[in-house]
Length: 249
View (cartoon, rainbow, N blue to C red):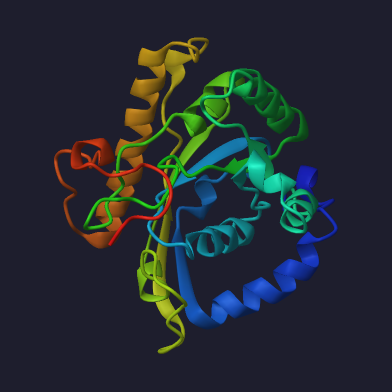
């Protein structure tokens, strides 16, 4: 465990004692590339997202790799009674709405704090469950790359597959049987953003960095699934779909 993370939020251990055995009962998680997650220092980890059960799989994979799983969460959730308290006590990181005038300033502050404290954060670049009908990564948003570029922090892609057998996309409830379903997780090499450093405020740079990130995540998922992803990444706007909230059946 990274030295900077040995002092954990007080609520982490009680929750981990409940969540880890429960998830381990449902999923047999096999992680490839865990050594690519930095043992020390800041990082931004960007996984694919197609099931509401994903965060538990990702959290355990990160924990087993020796780092504390901290997720980005909408700042509005931090104002919800009880839930907001839990998020704060477990070290989750609030994120402002993209349209907020203070979001750029907040990104810089969060990035500095990650570097100063040597912490990692998990950011879903798609922003919601993928709308792609075959559950390939869809068009990404710039939140993860903004954080990485702001502090010159390693941006690490992750892909996972098999979680849909525990909880399908927008499924109500989880599938208990059979127990110990196989879930594969793969962590990749950091995305090379060296030529984009210092230019994180330029829209074209953010678009390019996001494209590289989504390409890296998709390539990992292709390895896990042993399939080729569509040549054109799914864009909800092209199909009359909302990019937030639940997907209409």
